[in-house]
Each structure stands twice: as C-alpha cells, then as structure tokens.
Image 1: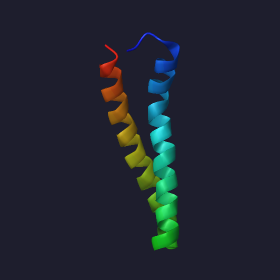
Image 2 (image 1 turned 120 degrees about the horizontal axis):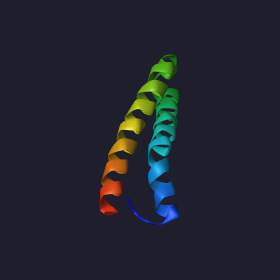
Image 3 (image 1 turned 90 degrees about the vertical axis):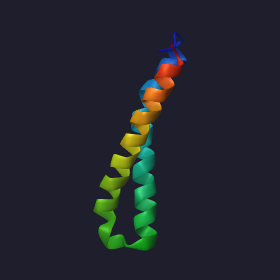
Image 4 (image 1 turned 120 degrees about the vertical axis):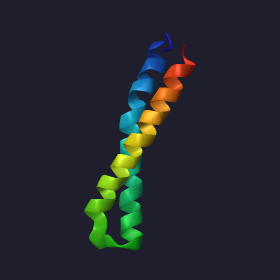
Length: 65
C-alpha cells in the first residue's frame, strides 16, 4: 500500500463507495423500469457495487507497492 494517509483513506473507502454507487444505480434503474422489483434491484446493485469496489481495491492497492 501507499505510504500517505490520503491514499490509505482512498483505498479503504473504495468498497463502501462502490456499494453506495451500486445501490443508487439500482434504485434509479428500478424506478424507471419496474418499481415492483425495487428490493431486488437494491440488493443486486449493492452486490455489483461491492464486487466493483473489491476489484478497484485490489488494483489500486497493488499500484502502491
């Protein structure tokens, strides 16, 4: 990992930010396409956001070495 405190804070916030962004995208998509599947789209969006956040975490933490 990188040495600076700001870089560590950014790396540590990638996973929660991915989950928040995925949830927001899922809610917006559910509102426009099919509101009855809002709960499913929120959980699916959070899962996809978590996955993207983990991938970004791994990629960014390797660059700091």
